[in-house]
Amino acid sequence: MDVIASGFQQQAPLGLCWRFPRMEPGAMSDPQWQLETLAVHGGYRPAPTTRAVAVPSSQPVASAFGAAQHGADLFDLPLVAVNTSLLLLSSITYGFAMLEMRRNRIGATQLWLAVTGILGLGFLSLELYEFAHLIHQGAGPQRSAFLSSFFTLVGTHGLHVTFGIVWLVTMMIQVQMHGLIPENRRRLMCLSMFWHFLDLVWICVFTFVYLREFV
Image 1 (spheres, helix red, strand yellow):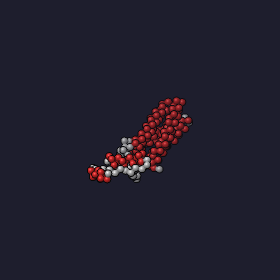
Image 2 (cartoon, one colour):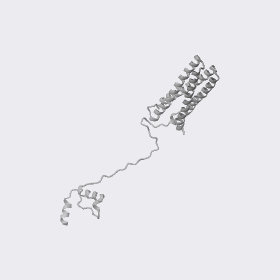
Image 3 (cartoon, rainbow, N blue to C red):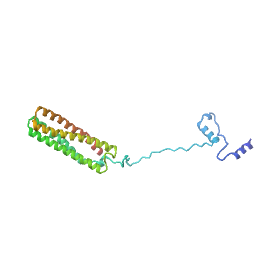
Image 4 (cartoon, helix red, strand yellow):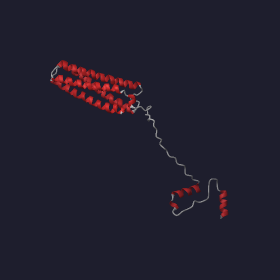
């Protein structure tokens, strides 16, 4: 038998070995023993396994449209603060207009309504300047999801301010033509609630969109 075995070993192809793996009790159900048996008889070699290792990086993750940029690098906080002050001040001047309306003083009411409209136009002018400046820097709404949301949110608020100014000018014309009749008083009160609501919304936008980036 030793002679036959040695003959088989001399005639075995390169890479094959006719030595059976040692069998222990219960080895038939052992996956490792089965792999060794396949390696002996079928030339099977398990492929080496590789593991992916995540390497942390200290660099900011770039967006799909270019290098990553933070809001603190884009926003001019002093400019936005001035813009916010204009809108908040317009809310105060509108309150003065309501006080003059209660006193039935048409001229003073019109004056404070005009001041409110001018402050609203100043707010819109600075907002449009900010938009133009961001787009000139290459930070347009198509740059990233954050900027798309920013332009949509702030632009929508700006459209409501524009609508409020148009409403205000319309009411000034109505007061000039018909005076402070009950209908105009009611409409001015509705516009007052709308204008103050715009200020409240802007405070939320200023806090969670602008100030949040500088904290």
